[in-house]
Length: 298
Length: 299
Image 1: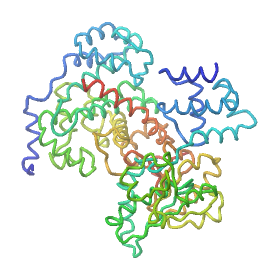
Image 2 (image 1 turned 90 degrees about the vertical axis):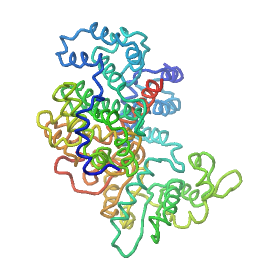
Image 3 (image 1 turned 90 degrees about the horizontal axis):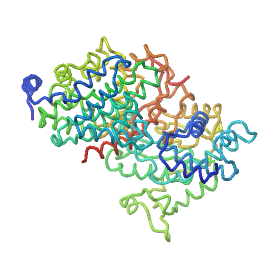
Image 4 (image 1 turned 30 degrees about the vertical axis):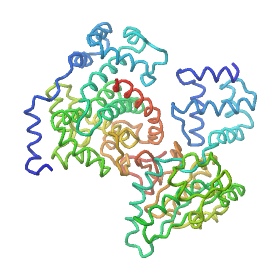
């Protein structure tokens, strides 16, 4: 059992550790590249970047063949994938594979596959939700959804035993993971994620999402994006894309601080059909499960 | 294109047929039952059955049968019948039942903790042949030695159809109805009746079946003091005005902490301002409440 005095120091311990994963070689240039205006992006350059990593390229192809990415005819080369899917989709896919390869294969009693499923599912829901409410940058929403839980990777690498205890508590009590982390570790994956996002020099909006997606009311500069991820994350968690367990509670999305923030900016939310969005998620569940298991179990 | 060739075309992975999406959206708008993309093939099968019956060669023409042809109302009902056919079975919607036990039951028990009479009252509105109320009763009987010790459990089960009710009271079921039944429940609460299964007396005893038309305003006002209402795949057949009236009755009949459960992928969007949608693990439900000041539930 972790004592109260040791709790506060765990975060300091993480800060000093070198085990925090480094940003994958392919990912860093891709992330930076994505920040440029769309018209300046060069498809061939992206192909070259991804092709440097053979296993990443193979995973990209597998994902590119999934209906989740809007592809219905088989593509068998990276080039064909890029031509067929378009630059943005391929970037999304490469990003997904690049980030999700970061999870340790085992440890902490936490199956990394469920982390992957949640992150990919959340990315897809963020993008879909963004389009539905006319959020101006659905690709950014996808990226934010994909990366929002980076802090869990940090916890898995640096404090596997302590994080394992938090995860076990969350499962046993059916409470949100960040609440269990707060009880056991004295901090959450939002705090741990902030450290990694800073070290990786991620864009300020993504950093804010990583740090504040469970407390959107505290966000300043990018509240809309943070709130969008907060609600999408919550929907995923209540709809079977949690971290391998069910939260035993009742959630009214209209009472979330994220809803109040988004409703101010996006009038479409006033009469939003949450039930339909929830039913639409059913389409993602099986696909995400199958896709992630096919790729990850290899 | 013939119905058969269309069916084989659908067997290939492909983007959803825009005509099918229009039918999906129509069914959702009119009946409140939604088919996500992964269930579109199922909807396609249901449409094909109707199209064969009507000898209608294309989805486009079938969409017209549902929207502009004189008998469109009857056709919509016929399609809804196809959509809900075979839906009735024991333990039909497990995430919903899990949510009932894990989240709703503790909240109801907490809300009634200080009352002198410990009574749980659940209404299966549109119970068809009885699988739903018996399932609920079995689940709650399991709790009578634990969380529901010393509680009285009342399950009210109503339907419009006399034949369905007779079947429900007889409580004998074939393999299709019992396909989701675990060995545990099968052994504990059922007896063999030839090659079928009969629900045992202890499960039948506190389920009260009666005939009720949900449009019968005077009878509806008598369904009082309810903790939970289940109304699955019934409201889909009602027009908006009737739906609103029935929902208002449910609202009045439920206790302040009460819950309304609908069928899988069934929604009250645009029907009510008074019920609020809540998310439970793997399921949605409606609770009574004021509108949230930040927004509203429905137009």
